Image 1 (cartoon, rainbow, N blue to C red):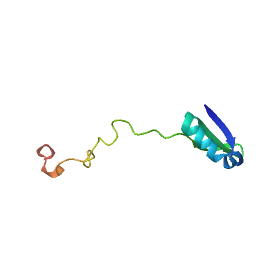
Image 2 (spheres, rainbow, N blue to C red):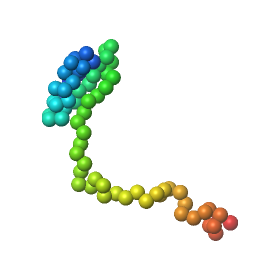
Image 3 (spheres, rainbow, N blue to C red):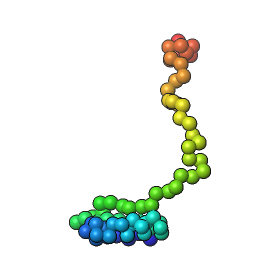
Image 4 (cartoon, one colour):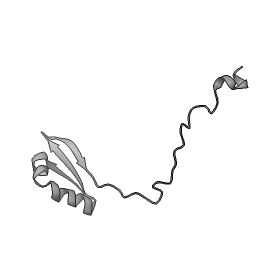
Length: 73
């Protein structure tokens, strides 16, 4: 459920709103001067694949210097 609150109400009830988001998965939109300026959402716990990817470096650039390629001559 998404709840929209004015910034002043968010400031007064910040802890309770954070608890509602954390416990129920609610979302809170904070409005200031009639427009949404912030969105409070719960974070997700890391899944089973968290930490299993190892970044080894640049995977886009050529492995060798283009001057060494026979096709470029």
